[in-house]
Length: 108
Image 1 (tube, rainbow, N blue to C red):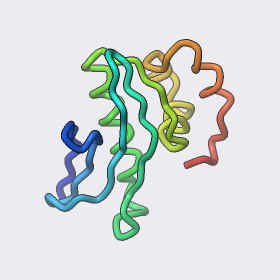
Image 2: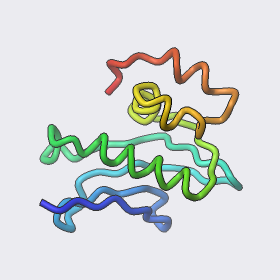
Image 3: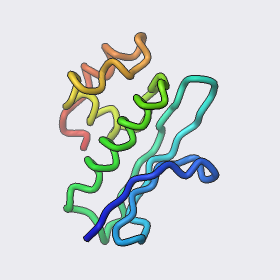
């Protein structure tokens, strides 16, 4: 099984593919240097394989690489940042960091 996460700017989403088949995505809005991720989902046929975490990780790594400020409106992405603050909290818009850290670990 080969997986790949890639930005699909024409669809305004990051996609995770398994053997070239779309397995999930994270939708976003991009304005200037801010990226708002507002929805993520993994196809039911692919759940339970850790693909959500892989999608979140690779998406956030690309956000970092691009120097964007993150607005995590998606509960799963916010929860992922909450669970990995040392790696990703610095990406979150400063005014939202406390809210992300107050989040519930069970949102994933």
